[in-house]
Image (cartoon, rainbow, N blue to C red; front, side, top):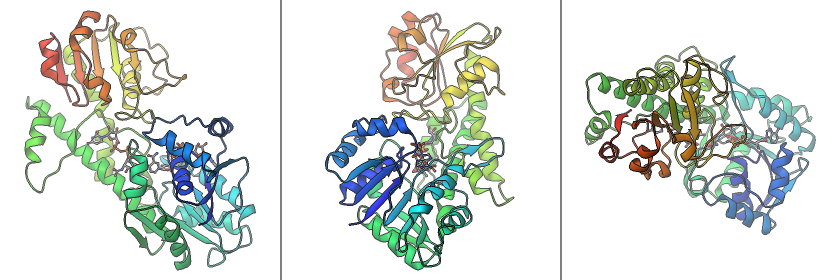
Length: 429
Ligand SMILES: NC(=O)C1=CN([C@@H]2O[C@H](COP(=O)(O)OP(=O)(O)OC[C@H]3O[C@@H](n4cnc5c(N)ncnc54)[C@H](O)[C@@H]3O)[C@@H](O)[C@H]2O)C=CC1
Ligand SMILES: CC(=O)N[C@@H]1[C@@H](OP(=O)(O)OP(=O)(O)OC[C@H]2O[C@@H](n3ccc(=O)[nH]c3=O)[C@H](O)[C@@H]2O)O[C@H](C(=O)O)[C@@H](O)[C@@H]1O
């Protein structure tokens, strides 16, 4: 068993640190967010991920995981810091990766292995991390190990996927790859595949998410085409998918989260070849506008109308609002398609009045409403996130509370027959 220092205790770092600790390693968890560190020390896990709280508690109580104030020397450094998208530059913001590398540098010893798990553009482990780490005086050509092992867990099922998913490991040297494989073998049931270097591993991760984004783009374009022919796209897709070699994904309000919408741009960071991929991004980003079109079919003049947007999380049954389509819709309804202002700042006088409700999200910076408040006197509800709670809504109860019984289901989660029976006019992406 080894000593491991995990850098970044968010959606990826915290479950990974707990997994390593519960697998017998001696783990130090380090994060620059003092509030997060304090709450973890109190045993509070403020993340809506099934089973995570108990799993982290076990790691902390068992002594395998210690939350530390300073980066600790360790045989392995696992870097799980954010790699956000710089929208202005259309590039990955690698400052967190560089900062974590600078924090490893003073404690790095000969024989240690540094593994980057964060998603980065192809080449970043080599060009961004290596030079900073080598300022320690040690060389990545053999004195310490440096590798990329991308994370592929699905939020909502992180603990199971941490164990079950295959991994891709690309070290700068064969020794770095072997040392990294040894660590993952201690908890991964899936296959561990190795690549000749970190760049292929980075590339593979990005094409996985890009493939999903492009395929969702196809489903979304099909939804728009079907609408023009007066066809139910979901019924058509289900029938098409009965073919053994066709597997079209689900259309929706666009693609949210901080991975699928940004990884295609990371992929194009060092190349001019994005074409189909960039088009799919435009299609997916355009789906909020399509939801507004459907809403206007029910409520032609939105000025002064009250619209309840159900869903601020980027997908069903999670609490993460990064690149939320619900918040993007609220912004667009209040300020028009180019709006970048916060969703809940009141809007302008000739726009709709929007209330956002999400039973999974508690975020003091968002003016979220409870269901009663959001839907009272509303002229329409728009369901943007496929939370289980929304499938169970009682349309008759809502109809009584609303000014007009209109519903747009951007997710396909509602049984619209029930809603029509309760007197609703309906539209569905
Ligand atoms: N959340 C997900 O579903 C997945 C995320 N990823 C990738 O994993 C990486 C991390 O993502 P998340 O865990 O979701 O982010 P997150 O934002 O939930 O957590 C990152 C944590 O790192 C901390 N941090 C920032 N700078 C630091 C530093 N210099 N040293 C130590 N801690 C630092 C932050 O305070 C935060 O707690 C990203 O590159 C992301 O693209 C990959 C697969 C899945
Ligand atoms: C290839 C792949 O499945 N990648 C996963 C993805 O996680 P994420 O939660 O972002 O993926 P997701 O469940 O597809 O959801 C992304 C977005 O796409 C939308 N979505 C998804 C499937 C679909 O048929 N239609 C659709 O519109 C969702 O509503 C959501 O807004 O990205 C994660 C990541 O890289 O962070 C990665 O670890 C996960 O395995």
